[in-house]
Image (cartoon, rainbow, N blue to C red; front, side, top):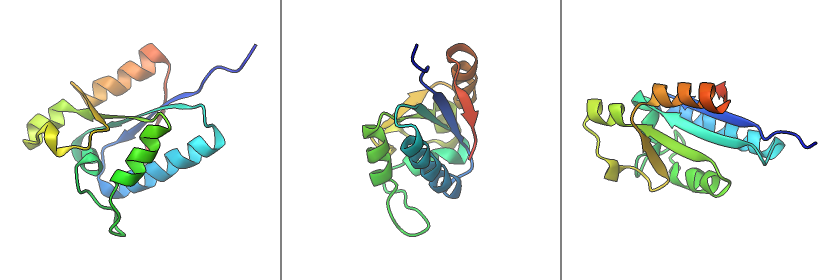
Length: 121
């Protein structure tokens, strides 16, 4: 019997520095376990890295890393409550960003109903 696929939700809520660190963790994770199923759920200031033109502290756009991870099957989800509270529009986000009604509700759903492990970088 084969091993069951690892499913992990990464929780981003603390801005660009956390996103830089978290994306590196995800790259490392996929290097060690290329078959892992990973979902990034972002809310509050954690959504900022998924916005068009967002840059790392070194001045590199997050877009390239997000595109690469998307090609490896990583899913990115943005909290619609955050959009409403911050008056942000969906068209300000990269095309890889998907949207969920509530970031924290999505995290709890993935953990409880779909058996995802939880990581907050």
